[in-house]
Length: 68
Image (cartoon, rainbow, N blue to C red; front, top):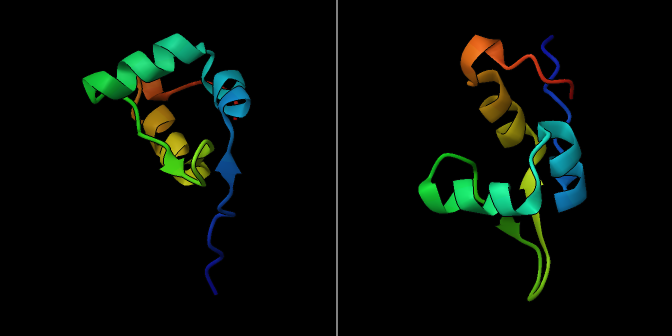
């Protein structure tokens, strides 16, 4: 039986901590199409799917040796 990875939503501060990027760099990369866009939770709230961020990290040069 396969276990699926736990899916969670990450808020901006968590994404910053996991990636080492600051807010401005994250949003700059989103506009360039090089970082995953967040999902809208409400009128003023967004979050990133943890699996999408993990996939982005794994795709970094050198295997994405960032801690998650």
